[in-house]
Each structure stands twice: as structure tokens, then as C-alpha cells.
Length: 97
Image (cartoon, rainbow, N blue to C red; front, side, top):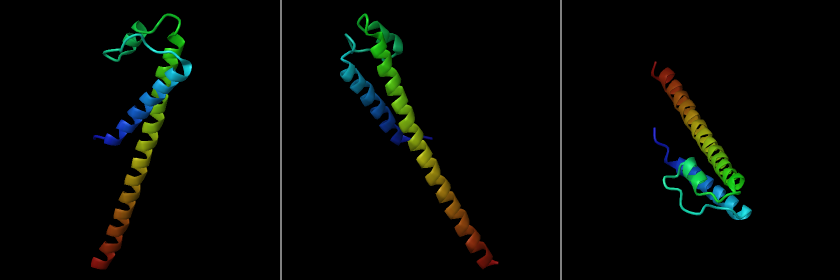
């Protein structure tokens, strides 16, 4: 089941990782392509590994939290809609009998 709204979680996670790098004043010497953790380690200047790992962990945490709340909210909406539909069907069935 596709959830296009989860793109927001990835965007906000990336933004928080970049903001962390800007605040800490660290970054990479080249673009990590492909964006694996090994590429990040390869292109991190010596002595800045802690800052790079902090960026990655903060980005992952923000993505997780945003996705969690988006999925939880979606699940609650679907549950409410299901309960309303069942209540409507229960109200219609006795009237038909």
C-alpha cells in the first residue's frame, strides 16, 4: 500500500540532517553517491566523524518520528471511518427487517 505522504518524513529528516551540519559547521568533501553510510564515511574529513554521525542519526530520528505520527494519524482516521460505516450499516439493517 503506497503512502505518498511519507515523502514529507524523508524531506523533514533530510532538512534536519543538513541543519545539524550547518549548526555544527561540518560536512562532506564530495557528494556521497550512492548515499550509503560507507560513502558518507569516505567523504567525511578526518576528525569530523562524530558530527557526520550526529547528522545521520538526527535525520533518521526525525524521519522516524514524522512517519510514525503520519501513519498513526492515518490509522486512526481509517478506524473512525470503519466504525462510522459499521454504525450506519447496523442502523439500516434493523429498519429493513
